[in-house]
Image 1 (cartoon, rainbow, N blue to C red):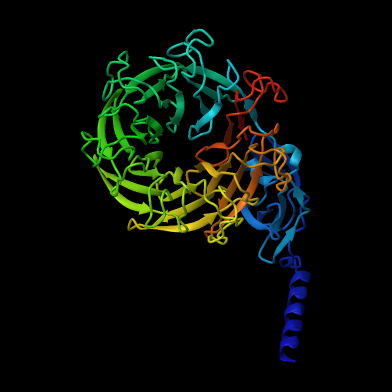
Image 2: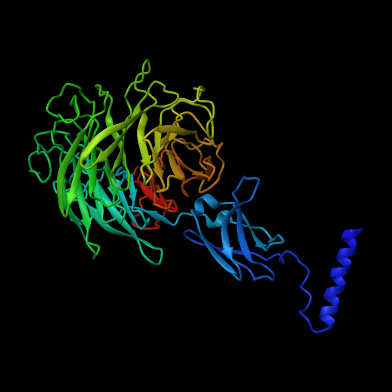
Length: 587
């Protein structure tokens, strides 16, 4: 009774004050009016939301529900009195996503209508072909993106031109399988164009220039390897004409001027060049482009720091170089702490943005009782001194799983993805049954995270949503700079589906290939966000050679066996006149 009486007294007082010219009574406390939300998709990677600003709100919240998810999650806080918001995303991972806008105040929130991203909007930004497309060139065998996603390098290791240097002129088929690299750039209008066609300064048949490529963050420094180059020189800037060391391998560094002109800066060889070492099996560049690492997976030395003996055939080695100004110098020769013959150390490389953390794959290394299961090694640099920090092995090592066959490292060097692209697990999704070996060569990816003390722990065991024998899930990997977006190629995947979220159960196009995009949320949980196919998916195209921009919002995918005879940008993807020519798709 006391509580009711007090309320009446307050009401009477307010009425009397109003009658005497006091402050007007406040509006009844209530949540804002529900906004009416509209969505416009702005390719290549923006969602533009608009609404009429409503009364009584103090803030807005944008909520997202990915396709297949049951709940909405807040993705943006928006200031009061707003009526528009641009949300920059990786559009391919938002196919079928739904959004609502909440208008909020101290009383509560009112929710808008739901808007969704149509499949029709989630298409490739560009379909890229070589300027000199030819059958079996395998354009797209190697792919690299600059940090901002506006410069793209592509290797075509079977290209046959006899040209040398930048944009040279040579007989179309004058140097069979000499190889080439191509640079494309994105302009301010969102159009891709080819900027350069690059060849080795010592082009020779069979060298396979373009086997591996790596770009600096700004896209102005490019490393390209020629895994079967035959030079006998050692170190940087040696004699390019002597061909006395068959299949020793070489790396070439190119730089771009402010005017957009490319030139070769360095011809780089191992410090202990040897025939058959396949120096250039892998390459990696730090963010500033001043640290170069080159892998030679068939190198034969037995100990780190001493490359003078050949006691461990095909054990492999990694070589580190640093640039001061425009001059490159050798810094380190790295071997595994448990180096053994035929283990292919440096088959894969990944380096942190600052160049202080290096991951090295040795995909034929052995675990006790499990031959060729594979391993990965993490090295740290202090000053110019390198030391091994960790040796990583799969949580379910198996014969010929090839763990360490491909690697991806976050910018800070604290998140590492390692593929075992011939792992046999039949599980699907995240952290499934690792003991299931029912899908031969299905492939798997393992995600590790480093604590501040330098201790690495496995964070996730990742499988495709449509695991199948022979899919080779993990044949290529890419991580965003923050380590929260992971793109995984599966070049043997067999669905004939096109674009996004198609029929994953289809098996009518063996070797068509697919890409799976996973994201990690704030709770540390990984989940698949996109299933990506070529718009012209066909059997044996091997779609799945992936690269991601720093922010994870631009994805480039190579399909080195794609068959169109088109040239340049956005040509006829339906053509099949050049089997094995290869193509790139940018999403």
